[in-house]
Every structure is written in C-alpha cells, then in structure tokens.
Length: 141
Image (cartoon, rainbow, N blue to C red; front, top):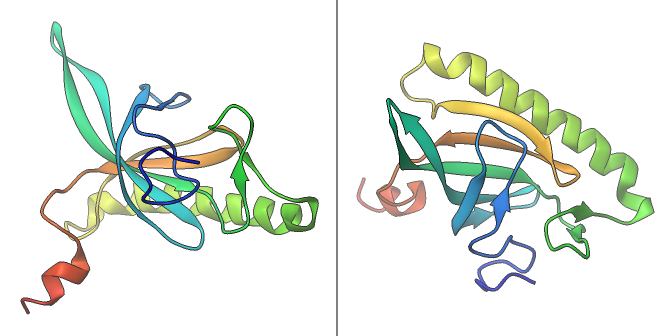
C-alpha cells in the first residue's frame, strides 16, 4: 500500500521508475481511474553542462483489480484478468505512441515525451502543467 494514502496501489512518494530516458522520481499522485494512475514526477535533465530538476506528469497503466508485487513497484493481476490486462496494456502503449505523434500538431493536447515499459506495465511521460484540474476550472466557466 502506498504511503501517500491517495490511492491504495499508488507508488509511494520517492519511488524511482526506471526504463525511460531518465529515472523518474514520484513526487505526488495527481489522480487515478479505472485503468491507471497519474503521478507528478521529477527527473534530473541535462541542460548544457548542468543537470536541473524538471517535473513531468507520468501516467501508469494500472487497471482495477491489479496490485503491487512484493517489490512494491511491479504490477500483478490474477490469472482471470491476465488476457484483458495484456490487451489493455497494448492499447495503452498504442494510445501513448499516438498521442506522442499528434501532440505537436495541436497546441491544445498535452505533449507526450516518451512511452516505455517497466515494472510489468507501461508508462507515458507528459509535460506537467500546474494550476489545478479541469474539474476545478469548469466551476469558473
């Protein structure tokens, strides 16, 4: 169980996810739904001769009915969900790759930096936009 209490199976704050271009450290849980968890993460990114911390949003494929393995990071699910989970994982990766290709064509789509697999699941790394969520913004419209 996560130590941040926002979602039972969320990765704990401070967890490092490896497998992408950079190691990403979980800073916060932004939200969760039926097929995934979204985190605020940071990575040390080179800028000329120095490294700077940059924040990203990281979406993890983690469908309802799955849980964390003994190492606290790996996604596991029951054999009865295995086929659906595998198909969902493939769709998640396809969605991330599609978004990565089209985000540069439309300024209203959040940019996807990379899509990768790790911990028996997949992730896509997006630009982090601060300022609240759409539900909060809709109240002011």
